[in-house]
Image (cartoon, rainbow, N blue to C red; front, side, top):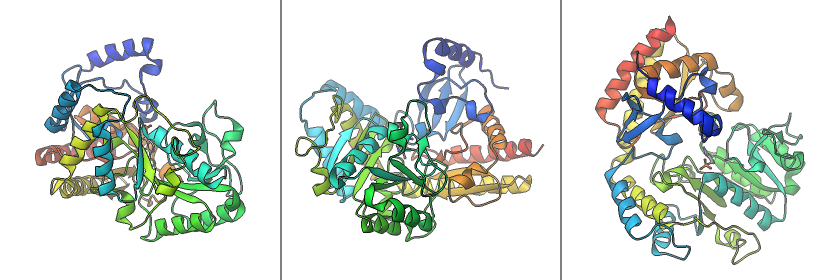
Length: 432
Ligand code: PMP
């Protein structure tokens, strides 16, 4: 068995200074049956090294951003260079202009962009801008989708399309939750019904075009997203795509492009920062002109557009533009999923895998997963065992059945071979 003595000691220290020992709740092992989170000391390429010296292959990818693995030389060099030129100006700078130009070249819908520091801020601000533009208050979102931890986004479904949301977190007021309407993903009639009841007061329909927060779930038809956008527009509302996970994940651009659709606003984060803190939002010029200093909707940020994040984001895009990057991630993930499915079958364990390119979720259950209720109905206890069996054999994934495995640009064929071997062993253990 792996020695985790140092992880235990560090986590004990962590708990006496950092609330819960973690700076984001999803890092705890609460939803995988407990245990001490592994404390990492170093990341290099596709590998993690923990404080006890154990080595792991990383498919967590820091919940998405680490598409180039750890300490990628191009990223490290960009950070070093940026540091020498000063990391924070509080003035306009060339790096933010160049980066915004590159993002718009990749995603032409981004007629105007603003950089912020997290996905939470990006989504929060698109909501404010949509409300400013439409003069309306309500937001329609989809059940189980996470859009950051702003008050309005910590709202769970009410029961039925005519009911308002209820706070999903202590400290969120009922009046805030009451502005949020929640409908199931992949269910056009439910969205139609909600909009027929509330349409006149809806500022925006907010959607992850490919869901990443109850596992990876794609729209069930090629026309679904077009219908979502059209329905929003027919009711005088905007459509906002939360592409915090999806932008630059599946190809060099947005998920909207994969379905040939044009939302009014986008929220982004994660990958575009190359691993540094970042968020961005943008879209139609006439809508973005609501934002100060041009318009009445306020948004600001001391750290926004800092040269360090900008230069690192530019470096990340440079690597992602190299031919074959996305094809490689797709091919490796496909091979891994085939091995997982074969191992599950050999051992009589029922699973369902949703894969989109280099990202996939292994659900324990035999039913298809198209929405949050489907994902909830999968087996949490078996997932918890699966997580620990993998970790004990040197494979790191997110400690939650609602997350994805992310294959990065730097996973090697040997990493995949090794993971396939481990997976075969893990399913054997699971079947016992
Ligand atoms: N939107 C989506 C779709 C996300 O997955 C996340 C984070 N997991 C966020 C927004 C919030 O981003 P951040 O954690 O950078 O605030």
